[in-house]
Image (cartoon, rainbow, N blue to C red; front, side):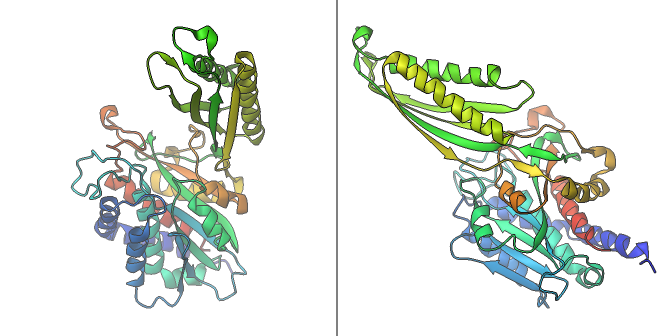
Length: 413
């Protein structure tokens, strides 16, 4: 006999009801996090605060916290089946770190720490995960009776903003062991509040960085024929690199090469003997990722040969492409639609040339990462990620909690 449909629908209704009734407490949780930001590899107090809130739960014998000495990231399992994870675990992840930004929001709960701010919305992400966790705990008995999985795993991950990323440490400790699927979200001000983007395939770029040193003959600015003009060489390398994207890569293929620093020279009349540059490379396809680096080095090599100078080039490999698996998208999609409405979940939205170490989880299990709209209707007040005035509205934060909560309910029969 089929189970009554009311079981599953009742679980979702109960989860939503809990979130609505707890909205003020969840927003206070977020305000505490926002007011006390910590940078990558510094999230000690953030971890302590979240774990202390979790440990306040009574009758928590079905919970297990996994934390470690070499990372401030941790995870919590809510265990439904005593089957040694034979039915698998489902992971939900939020990042914890803030940015070195001086806050200018004017919020009553603005950062208490000068020069540090949750300017990327990670305080909202943690609140979404914590709120969903609390909703599951509040509905534990009925979820246990109907769960299709052994456990739900709530991952609070440190150091997303700083390579190699906190995901690497947690994976080394076994966070993906037994995980059948993983899910995450990121607030996005380029999407309007009440909307979301959820697509299959590559959704966030691989990132690589480079450091370049040029060396040659310095000399007097009045006698360029007796020196190597490394500033002119630098300009030609930068200009040539942009032609890789515009002429060496298909216009239908996203790719970015950006030079972000240039340091050279000491006086207005001296041609320098050294020039140092650095930058970033972004791509959505592995073959393009390799090609961009090859073409960039070729331009540097050829230009230095033309000028008769030397170079030292170093590539620093960063996060891989974040790929959404079809199977995971098909599970995340109805959860998003139930909260935001079917017409507000876009299957084709702008893919991001930003990067995410959530990509490492996606290499281990089918995963889905949703872009969660938080854009202000007023263009003058809609600030981008990493801006000192960036903020996520209360309604959006509660909707993010509900999306994670609906996702958890979706793993019940």
